[in-house]
Image 1 (tube, helix red, strand yellow):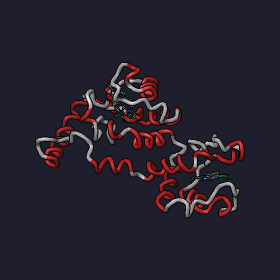
Image 2: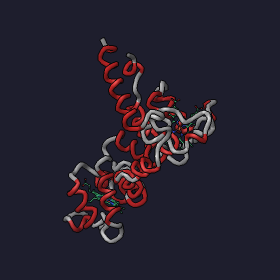
Image 3: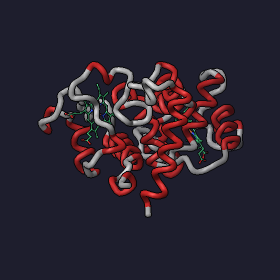
Image 4: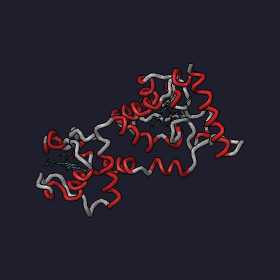
Length: 225
Ligand code: HEC
Ligand code: HEC
């Protein structure tokens, strides 16, 4: 049943690939510089870096108010709830005072560039969603090796043997991924090229990035013809 459905589609895709890329290489060997630049300059990816530098101190890593400053202001006050982008933008620009709220939320207009403001607002919209946050972590830290599409074809992948894994075909469970991302490949008897992220990334960021890559897995059932 499936075979009948899939074969003609595959054929069309291949013909299309041959027409658009030439017979020799229907699929590119690795990411181009442009694809990497695009992935890393998504507003929410850049905004994640702004948030980390200027906002986590008060709002906590995921905007839940669990932060160093929460003793001063009380965590409830520091929770970033859901608003539309305009709502976020006006309190970020004008600060608490500018929108009739607490003076402890500073105004950022002037201090951050226009680009940083729109980027951080884009990032705020991902805060409540672990997978979306994980995509930001992935695009900031993992694309050069594992690739923009997580297919193992990152810009530097050619340098390594074994190659960075194709994460869309991973047969490892969530727990294993948490371990290899935290402790690195070497500790698990795999390539030392897979770095340990436990010192650079928080446990929350590692959970998020693993949630994200878990969503990318194409299961064997999906692939079976
Ligand atoms: C010095 C601590 C502090 C820093 C740093 C800070 N904020 Fe705030 N922020 C607050 C406080 C306090 C409130 C609560 C204001 C109120 O409700 O009266 C708040 C409220 C907010 C709200 C409204 C949340 C809601 O659901 O009502 C947003 C959005 C926000 N901040 C974004 C940011 C962003 C983005 C940054 C970094 C660029 C940032 N804040 C940095 C203290 C801070
Ligand atoms: C410097 C290159 C490099 C970077 C950066 C890198 N990895 Fe890896 N990763 C590898 C290599 C190489 C392997 C394969 C190890 C092996 O097969 O022995 C690997 C393997 C993995 C695996 C195991 C997959 C499986 O199915 O077995 C996971 C999960 C993984 N990486 C996640 C990540 C995440 C998430 C990030 C970003 C936080 C990341 N990696 C960053 C090189 C890298």
